Image (cartoon, rainbow, N blue to C red):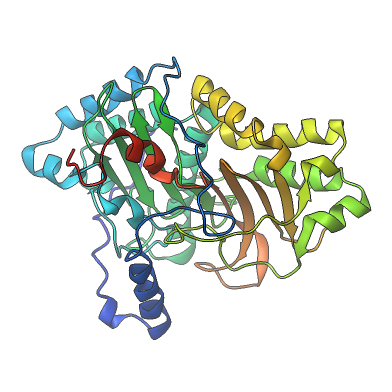
Length: 384
């Protein structure tokens, strides 16, 4: 199956919020209100832990990603380039959301690009992501097309209904980045020199498996689901009790879109209460998410998380049995991971189930979107 073998439809029109239901209008009003607060980042107590993200040379070249973005930009005309380009300090970074509606989308929609230009966008994703993360992202897009088949709503769901934005200009030393934004695929990548921050990043799908249609057999997040469950299964009953912080699943992730400044205390099973063998298994679970970066950058990210291994917790919400939906969280000062099942939303609501899943990664203490690095590099209001 090629990246360009897709069904082309016009981009969804921008939503007229005045015509939406009151609950949706209230939701979007809440989102906009959250953007009034200056970005701080996810914290455990409302205060930033200091000195976690120094400017440094990693020795890992970002040239392949620079080249991929430059090639894409060179393919655009003046109008397209203006639409896709934003200052690196822009608050538009924070406007991503998992919701499928075209409410605050920005940049260029893939469906409005030529086949060649879309190929260049996928090349950006290949260069910026690890191989498995790239495949998961593309499968999430394809499953969004499958959702159009299941719902009969091809004007709302589709493989090409994703928006790309470029922040700053690709450079070997100045800060810049890119964003992919759409239903079940939200990627934020900040670059400064050879440092890369690939958060916030959310990948998901409803359903997680296409049992019919154009993309029959496509599935996502099965490894994230199974490995989290297996880790919980490997704990003793006493440890599972410490890890379990509740039984009522949240409707959405605690740190999903428009929750940039959320306060989430540490609660759950700490690594000091794990055996050495369990800690090793736990690190392997963390690696599953740090590997969303390309290999060399992924190793740096894992090393960063491991430096705070003694401060790391594993938390679980939900029942623990082979079929029940669940939520789990991995959390330390430099990485926040949550995997969770949701009830049906686009498909008939049959309660919480394993057909609808999300996996989210953030960088706590102010370095989502690379903001901690950016603040150190240049004054907040300096244009780029």
